[in-house]
Length: 342
Image (cartoon, rainbow, N blue to C red):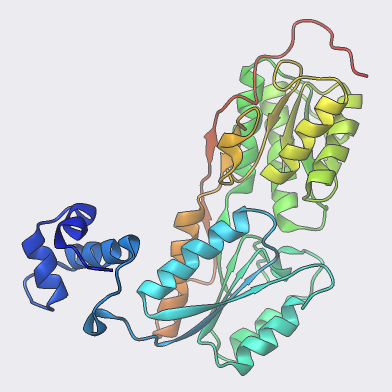
């Protein structure tokens, strides 16, 4: 492909002369401008000149629980891109039912000589799992960063979405529409994100809906479409007019469950998702959801890990990121007429 300076300049928002200076390795170009030109090369599909190619300085392990939930590929994309810009290559490890478990992946990564590992919603997020596996890695001197599922007994740096505040936002939004019978469809009780979401839901129900004891409005199931559908069926049978879901995938199942009961979303029942996965704006109806700040969290995880690698240890605590409520068309005012299910 013939490289056109005009195309690169337009993409980067700089002059052709600046592009020429960067490509020829000249001085006098601000670091941010130089990076904008290099990014424009990558976006347009041009191959960087040999002298501008970063040399990989090492491998970084990235362990994800799965790829079927779109939120995890989103994390992988942000983290992998940030590592490449710093000269590192991500070794992606994903888990499936009956596949390689996290501990075996960790062993394989250590054998490959990785410089560090980022765990996204790993075994650390299971409150019943043994935290010593991470203690051994830390004692060996391997830098690690854990995303979501804070465990205070693990002496590592955590990057977390504020799940408690997220459910506060969701319930507050639904209560402002007049809903009082609000249900929560969420994953298994042993997972730290589930615990945080449930705590936020119960507090918010007491504050905004006046429901002091909301235990019967919480259904624990799987973070899957089927789990969301099953939870919705149970919550609708308990006269819920709105459902908060622990993930966008569960929300898809909840919408399916409502429709199979002969109900319309949002006219008869409102549904709120969680994550703001890439497909949520294109669902029918477009999904109101809680946007997890994936980009900011992923970049923070990479920055923290690279500081550890360079001998600048990150704080051994949890860094909380505040999510955002994204209102679309799956929520509406509480129905004024009694609904009839099949």
